[in-house]
Length: 90
Image 1 (cartoon, rainbow, N blue to C red):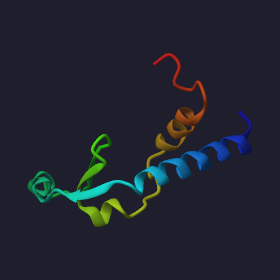
Image 2 (image 1 turned 135 degrees about the vertical axis):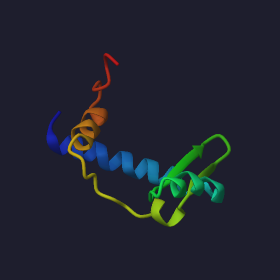
Image 3 (image 1 turned 30 degrees about the horizontal axis):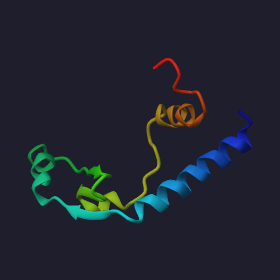
Image 4 (image 1 turned 90 degrees about the vertical axis):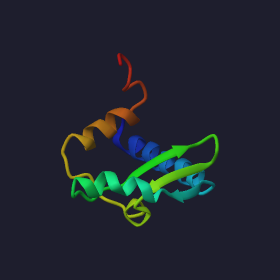
């Protein structure tokens, strides 16, 4: 796939998913924090119940913070997933 076309596809995907995410009610699940706290870890967990329009979230503030991928395998895997037909054979 031509690189500019791939970028357009990624942009379009972000726009579509951003529009869908706006209609989701966010419910903070305070009890989920014990999983992270018992292991002395900082983390975030988001479970989307799309049919109900609810996102169950632990650590909402961190979930709303954008992070760049820091491991090298995420970038090519994201490109493969976006490429039409890139998931064939799985």
